[in-house]
Structure formats: structure tokens, C-alpha cells
Length: 303
Image 1 (cartoon, rainbow, N blue to C red):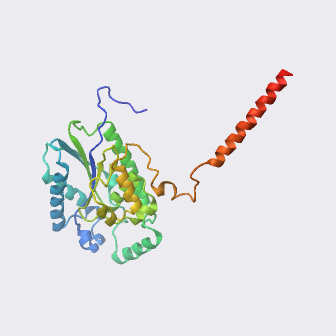
Image 2: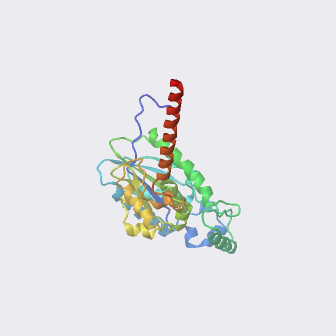
Image 3: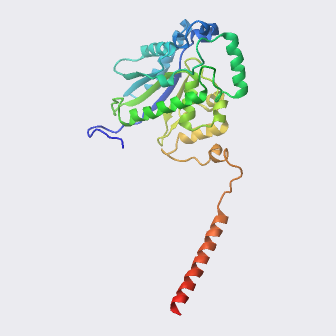
């Protein structure tokens, strides 16, 4: 059982959880960089630095709609994400930033060690045929491996919120900004919204310094549809059913069950009956037999 400090206030949900991919990196510009530089040391280009500063300005505009707000950052330990955060931070004051944490579990997918270009081209072609989620890079990880560690991070994130470890002033809107990588961000969304592997395979990667804003809806559920348009969601690879679910979440009560989303049941079963009339009929038969038995028992006792 989880123990709480007597004086501790219960955690308040963040108004927004924002996923941000790093700015343009040396590896994005020229993949040969991976052959001589360890992936975790690949840094931003000058354009990536400019992108990150612009992203910081955009994020501040986005979250400063209310006079009282604060921000807490989580960041991957890779050089390019740390540099992205540093440039984003130029748009915020110490008054607004209540904390930052380096989090290894939201790092980039491990593709192996030094990456020889021709070999990696062949491996990535093989991944397309095998499936992006389950394919494990030699000496590296699969997206399924990343899913497991991101799931662990999410559990820690909820504990941080629930136990108020972020030291959040409850009179202020709290915004969590997670500076990470494309695949880790997509897997985060997959875990959060309970998307299937097939739905994950539909998703397009985030562009450099692109963000995904999960915002609390009117009923207390997080949704991408509060901030983002249908056109954006379609561009990112969400199917019409997935978009409909996001719209439902934008006004659903916390913890509600969306029985209108086809993949929750229809994606796993064929032609489930709408009702259990046959079961009801069986129940009625059982009741009739029980009544008959009781009558016989009563008759036996009376004779």
C-alpha cells in the first residue's frame, strides 16, 4: 500500500502534457555522422538550434493563456535533446520553471553501436518488410522494447503527479514538457491512448521540433483534439476512428468507457452479438427448473 505524508496535498493533473521532438541533428542532415559519432553524442545543427528557439517561443505562447502557470521538463539524456531543451529554455524564466529531470527511459531507440550506412539501409529495408514495431535492430532494440521502458516511465510519471513530487503550486496550471525522440513520442501516445500495434504502424514520425499537445478536456480526459485540428491528426496518420476517439475524449468524463470505438471490441472479435438473448433464455429455463424442484421438495415435505 502506498504511504503518504499527512501534510501532503494530493496531486493535481497537469493541464497539458506536451511531447517535443528534438531539433534537426547532425544525423538528420547527414546519416554518415552515425558511422563515426556515437548516437547519444549526435548534436544539433545550426538550423536545429534555430528550430529549438522558435519551438520555445511557440510553447510559451501556447501555455501562457492563463496568468498563473508553471512548467516542468523531462528530457532524454542524448546531446541533441539536451541542446533542444537548452534553447527552448531561453523562452522561460526561473519563476515559471519548477523543475527538470533527465530521464533515460525516453531516450532514442537503440539502433546498435556505430552505424555503417550501407548495412543500415539494408536493415531498415528489412524492418519495413518485417514490421516497424516488432523488428529488433541487431545489437539494438525494437519499438516493442522502447514501449516497455516508456510504459515504466509513465508509471513513474503518474506517481510523481499523484504524490506531488513536482512541487507544483496548485493555484497554477501545470504543464509537463517531454523533450524526446520521434519513436519514443509515438510509443508514448500508443501506450497512453491504448492504440493497437496496427494503429501504431499507421503513425508518421514527428518532424524536428514538432510537438503533440495532450490537453485536459472538459470532463477530465486528455485528448489531442483539444488543441490540434482534424487535418493535423490525419496528417500524423491517425485513422478516422482514432480521431473520433480523440474528439470523444475531449469532452468525456474521466475514466469513461468509449463503446463507440470499433477497435476496442470489433478489432478483436468477429460478429459479437448485440445482446445475450440466448443467455437470458437459458437463465429463464434454469429459474423454471429451480421452481419445479422447489415445488417437488415442498410436496415431498407435506406428504
